[in-house]
Each structure stands twice: as C-alpha cells, then as structure tokens.
Image (tube, rainbow, N blue to C red):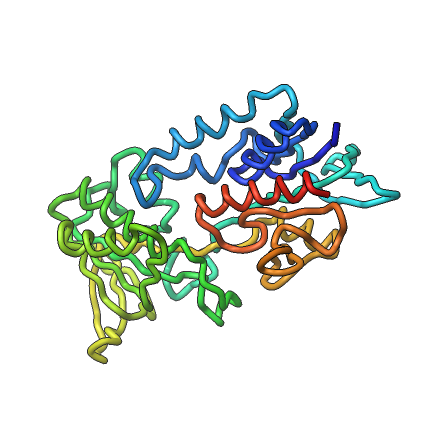
Length: 334
C-alpha cells in the first residue's frame, strides 16, 4: 500500500486524500489548525449558486471517514527532505514522519489590508475587509462602527492584487465575483441601503457569473463605478470619506459611506511560503512552482513531491477540487 503525506486539510487536501484512499493508498493528512477546512468555514455562502459553506464543509468532512485516511490536526510541517526514495517530514516540535509521496496543499491567506495604509484599515472603524463582512453576513447582522445598520456601503476591488505597490501584479481571480455575491447578500439583508462597487475592470470569468453581475444591477440595484479609491479618512460623525476617480467619465469623486469593504486578494499562506523555500520549489510571488501550466501543473522540481490548489496560484473552490483530483491521479501514476 502506497503511503502518501498531504500537508493542509483544506478542500484540496481532503479531496486528494479521498481519491487516494479510494485507490488503496494510506494517507496521513496534516493540518496546522485545530480542525480541517479553516478557510471554508470563514465563509457564509458560495458563488455562483449562493449555497451554504457549511453544507460543503460537511460533505468534504464526510470524505475523511475512511480507514485509509489519518488526520493529524495542530501539526505544522516545517520541512520535507527526500532521502533514498523516501520523504522525511518534520513538524514544528521536531517530530518526524515518513512517506513515499508528498502532496502540498497549504493554500492561501488573504492579503493583509493593514499594508494599504491609505485605505485606513485598522485605523478607521468603518473600514472592513471582505472576510469581516462575510462573518457579518454569516450572522445576518451588518453594522457600522456605531453598531447601527449602515445606510451606504462601498466595495473596493483589487486590494492587494494587480497592484505594483503591494508587490502583487497578479489577479486573484475570485475577488470580482465575491464582491458581486456579497453585494447581493447585503442587499437581501439591507433592502434600503445604497450599495456601490468600485472596480478596475470586472473579470466575471465563470459560467453564470456574467448573469449574476447583470442581476446585481437590474434586480438588486447595485451601482458600479469604474475607478480606484486613492484615500480614505474619518469624518466627525464616524463615517468614512473616500476620494476617488470615475475613470469612465474622467472626473474626481468624493463620497461618504458608513462602511468601506476592502476586497482583499489571495496571497500564499505562511505554510506555502515556508515549505516552498525549505524544499527549493518556491516560485513567483512565493507560490509553489510547478513544472509547467499544462501537463506538469501538479508536479514540482522534486520527484515525488506534488502540489495542488491555491498553494500554487489563486483558484476558486470548484477549480481547487478539480485540481486536487488531478494531483491525486498524478500521484497514483508515479
């Protein structure tokens, strides 16, 4: 029985473990958090069908109920060394584990909005991130800095993505559709609120996403402004004043809002960065480098060491699950 170690119990790690276990592999799944699926459980609903994140988490968790899968939580793998065809994995406490093949599925983290000081996150209470808003939506209670229902909400796209200043020139792929999804969810909870969405250009790249964007305008009265917000500041009554430009008409804009929501992009997680550097497989922007974007996209420069999901690039959950299956079959072929 082939022994495979998977590092990271998110959607990619669980899906790959399920496929490998079904093909008579012995799988050890390492997760540094207290439980699997930390990023999924941060969300309320998923695009494009507004399905429950909890429902998806339950279905994925059920895949772990297999005698061939062993899950070790609160185990952070910090190093992987290959010696004579076998991999030695070392956790943060110095304990060693051994496997024939290793799959890295350490995933992503959100861009830290504190790095964009001009937008006021952590300075003004009315400035929040998309993750903060997702938690409010989950509890069906959206409030401003004074604990009141906001009358005006502004979303800002591309925070920490497509941004030379932050060092991330790439597109995070899911922010546009996430903003539209969240704006619709806010409208359902706050039918009287004014909702604006600032964008550079909308990349609604998936099936059903363009339709959702049109529905956001026509059915939910979400107002889209093509432009960037250059600065945010507080007002005397605890609101947020933003300075921006409407790039379609070439005019500067000034607006006051109760909530400014920063749509933060994806960055490689600390685990992805650390293992990429430790194993010599670090690629652009500290994601894991693969052998190529087509036939070698789950393979690394180290034979027997594989990667799947957002450890290598921004992906949606759907694409992550598909990629995890591909990685599992790549392992089975080796």
